[in-house]
Image (cartoon, rainbow, N blue to C red; front, side, top):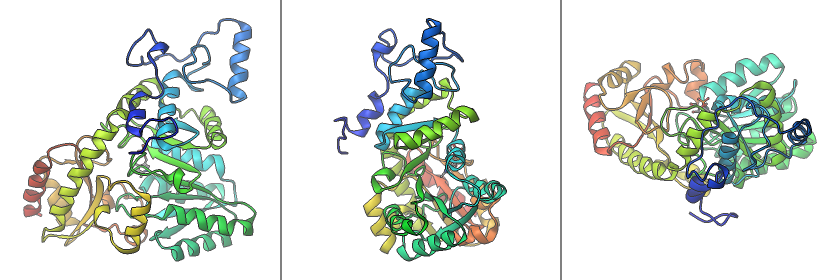
Length: 417
Ligand SMILES: Cc1ncc(COP(=O)(O)O)c(C=O)c1O
C-alpha cells in the first residue's frame, strides 16, 4: 500500500502513530491513563488549559499538562484519534463510545428541524431506526437510495429529498449491512455538488465505512466530508470493545467534539487503550479474513441449497466498476440466501458447531446471524426486502479460524438445513 504524507504506509502508521516512549517513562507501549480528572499546576495553568480547550487549540499529541476532565478528552483518546485520523487520511477524528454514538452525534450536530436526510438502503438496523423513529420527532424526514451505484437512482433520490425540504445530510453505508451492496460515493458527491446551487448549500456527505474499514476504503479521498466507522468491528477486531470514530476536516470534527463533550459519549481510557493496540494488527487481520471469506463465499456459491451469495468479490456490471474504483479489498462480511425461508435458515444456524450464532462482525471469530430476525428486526419487511434482506438471508462475518474448518462446519449444517 502506498506511503502517505507522513511518509509511512498505513500498516506502519497503525503501529506507530499517536504514542512515543518519551510520553511515559520510556515505555514501549502506552499506559492506560485511568483517571477522571487532571490536576493543574496553578490557577493560571487551569485558566490556560480551559482557554486552549474552548478555543480549540488543545490538547496536542504528547501534551502532558493539557487535560481537564476525562469527558472532555484524555491521553488515550488523543492517541487513538491521532491514529484513526492518519489511517482515514483526515485532518482530525473524534472517537465515541460506540458506532451508534458516532452516528447519532453526527446527525444531531448537523441536522435541524425541517431538514431532510438521504440514506442508502439497506443500512444497519440501528441507523435505520434512528433515522426513521427518532429524527422524525425532531422534524427531520428521511429518504432512501436503493442501488446507489447507479447515477439515475442517486439523482432521483436527491430530487425527492430536496422537494420535501432542504437536504442537509446524505448518509451512505457502503458496503452495506448486511448485503455488502455498494454505493458510488464519488458519484453522490458529484451530483450533490451539481444540485447544491438549487438550495444554496451542499449537503454534507457522511459515509459509514464499517464494513471495509480504513485500510480497504478511504471515503474522504472519494469526496465525502466525513468518514464514520464502527470501531467495535474490524478496527477493534476481538469483539471485546465498543467504539465509533468520525474523521474529516478539523472544523467539522470540532463540532462533533463539542457535542460529544456535552453528550458525554466519548470513549473511555481503557477502551481507547485496547483500540490503539488493536489497530496494530488491523492489516494482518484484514488480509487473513479477506482470504478466508473468499474461500467460504466460493464454497457457498457452489452449494445447491444456496440461492444467492452477495459477496463483493462476485459483483458484476456497473456495481463492479464502482467497486474497482472505490474499494481496495472485498472485506469479510457478506450475506447468502438459502432456498426456502426462515425454517431452513434456522435449521442451518442450529446445526453449526464452529461458527458462532451472534450479531456483530469484524472479530477474530466467525459470526453468523439471520438479519431479518436479529439486526434488522425492527426494519419493516417491505423496506427490508427492497434492500435484499429476506427471511432466509444469513449474514456471515468471516474471522481468523482455518477456512477449511469453517467450510466443513457450513457443509454439515447445510446438510441439516
Ligand atoms: C454498518 C454499521 N454501522 C454502524 C454500526 C453501529 O456500531 P456499534 O454497534 O459500534 O454502535 C453497526 C453495528 O453493527 C454496523 O454494522
